[in-house]
Image (cartoon, rainbow, N blue to C red; front, side, top):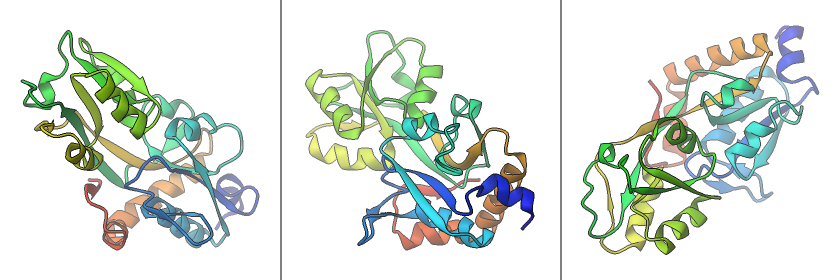
Length: 239
């Protein structure tokens, strides 16, 4: 490894990897020591191993908090959904996995497809600053977005306020629909959230190396192996 690369990607001598704990598909458990386990931590571990440096996992409760810290010199790589708003501070690799995002509607709803939700009068519950929320903020023109912090609070908002729809990752909605008699997951999707590995803006050598690493991890079948290892439903290797 070149000195320039290591100075950009692991300036302290240890690879500090920012991990988004809110993504239940990429972080599926904790080790005996309380460290995050799942596809994202394993990707970070593989990157550290390839570089030949120790790994330190830096957990964040939400993706927004992880993104906010990009320029604070507290993490070297961040495993997070790639979104234009985040790209102002972070240089992203191409995605290594993607997750379908759609809507849940209550019993009796006339809505049938995700494309029908953006209509005047419809209120959509969504977890604040999630990758799919950032997409909705850019693209919803007629419906009203109503924000909550985290999945549990979003579900509570949807139920308590009797909203017309709740936006989330489809694998999570598969669990939520079982809690709400008569509710349905709409056909179709409004986006597919792409999960990437990013570095703080300006670390060009590190960004180039990560891009090559991610492409190889997909092509070799390594990413697919991680999905199978952790038995994650609803997670696909990104094209």
